[in-house]
Image (cartoon, rainbow, N blue to C red; front, side, top):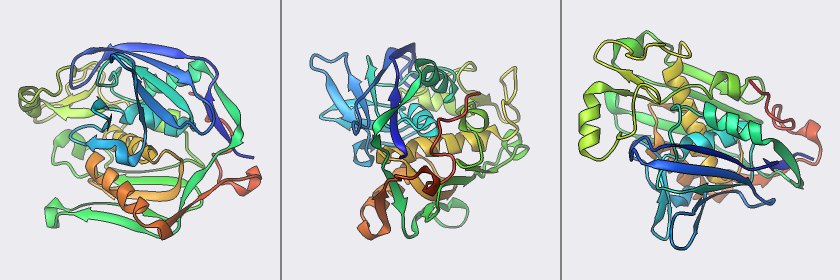
Length: 307
């Protein structure tokens, strides 16, 4: 049987929010089977639980924000991506502010935290959301066109193409495909950092965003080049970060996907629209579990490989 997973012990991190600049404490704790991933605002007079679900997403401007009864948490996508990549099904995330700490701007720190706490199997079947027919959302036309699509696939594969008119991005790989059955999330995706442009910083900060951003937690570019002293972590770090984000956004379903995801210039908003479109079509998906590991797609039966 392919079993659900949680942590063996709790683990903690302290950092600042990318957009808020606020100090925030994060505690990741084991959760019982069938709990899902639940953020808990423990700084409020009464603790508020925010279960991760496509319908919980209320804002997708520059990050994914979830909300329940007025309590909110922003920038959940990197931690959700790490949970997806490592196959964490059940987790309590205690948080003391409105935004997940950005840490180094990728999912690598969250992977380290989760693996350091230890991952254990639970005596309950892991349920997968299996896509049965193609589902697509598309916006814009011509140079403004963007789209995201899910198609049937016995496994989980993501392919993404970006299109930025910038010398540093143009000189890097702009298309990448990641397959859970053959590739390593920790090695191939997790270290890809978020990125931004100096010309956008002033506008963002006037709007109360990007207050915690800097060269230690993002790739920063001027009009011509990457400003980070160490350069890029991957030759194609930009498109790999978009896959990292997409994995986090897709995991807002609350269950692992069996599907092929593909996208062109997509982002948090379009990814969430794709999930909502999928869920609105009951004939386009079903839920499955695997009593026999040999019947499951490759890469799902065993714990994810470490670094």
